[in-house]
Length: 140
Image 1 (cartoon, rainbow, N blue to C red):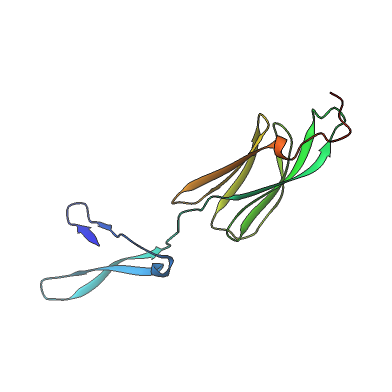
Image 2 (cartoon, rainbow, N blue to C red; image 1 turned 135 degrees about the vertical axis):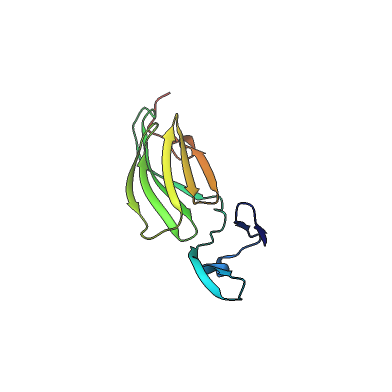
């Protein structure tokens, strides 16, 4: 821990989630009298791990040019469910009460799943071709 007397900032390293809680700042006058001057609620967050991304085929037209997939993007206990095509995703469901912000996007045939918080952001991607494969119905 390092306190800067010039700008009154406090730098704390190697915090863990168990360090979260209410902290108070106090001053001591020349007579030794202590006075609380501020209270802070510290919420420590870990860096976001790389999201888990799962795609499942919902619809594939006979030409194989149009594909719709169900997407599940998750980080720890947080998840979001979307439906995506080549260029657009629509959110279907989101887990309640999460400290991780999740988003799903589709761009030029690739689905991107991102998780972020106040500490970090991680993204996982997968091409739609990994699940949108013509097997027997497509004409070439």
